[in-house]
Amino acid sequence: MENLGLRIADCGLRKDALRAVARGALTDIAAFSRGIVGRPLRGYQLAVARAILDSVLNRRGLSFAVMMSRQAGKNETSAQLEAFLLLRFMRRGGTLIKAAPTYEPQLAISRLRLESALNNPWTARLWRRQGNAIRLGAARCAFLSAQPGANVVGATADILLECDEAQDVDADKWDRDFAPMGASSNVTTVFWGTAWTSATLLARQIRDLERLEQADGIRRVFRVAWPQVAAEVPAYGHYVAREMARLGADHPLIQTQYALHEADGLAGLFPPTRRQHMRGDHPLALIHISEPTRL
Image (cartoon, helix red, strand yellow):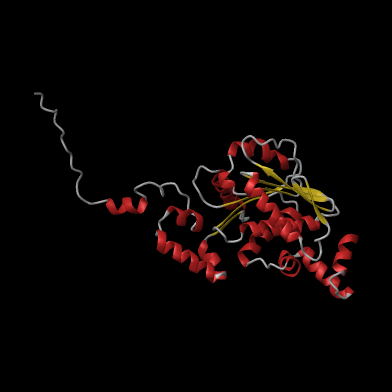
């Protein structure tokens, strides 16, 4: 990695220290996150990133579903994972593909996050935009809209295939246009998102992956609800507690976006807890309605 070596040399490290930093940063996402990007990933983020990287780097071709509560760092995890893989594959080459329900604003934000992760001492002057993609050496990350009318046929992913906000992506669109993109390389696939209903693409994938987990014991589904985030970020817990006090713990927003429970039965006038309170042990009364009296 001649160009990369020049960038590392700019850090002013001795050669022996330089080699140690390079080895660590290119093999451990935690070292890359802390020492190169400068934004250390939290424990629950590292667990997700390491599982995905193990599948990518060892060509296992696994699929994963990752649900994180809102503002818990899902997009930052994805961006640093993409930056790490671009660095690892910058000489060998290959393509990551990231899909989302819309290009603006979702994929545009994802692209900016990746650019931010690449603006580090090693790669800041090496990456460049190329149409709807970010390129680092011979590796690239392409951002493709999953809107029903978007034309994405022909793209191929051989490093990683991602679906962001998968709860909002049409399942037929994914199955028809995106899933085949990784067929020839048995690519690792990640579905990112948060809970909504049991009818979403994300919910479908979670059910399928949980069945595989039971069969072989390999973890594929990661749920990071708000208490797990609060254990590492107390301020986040204080914020959610205030929202729960304001809206109520059973509010659909709290249950889906923070507790990661599916919304089936949560919406409407009588959610499950209220219906339970309305139940009684009295016998059912039959009311007879007579015909109206004719005048």
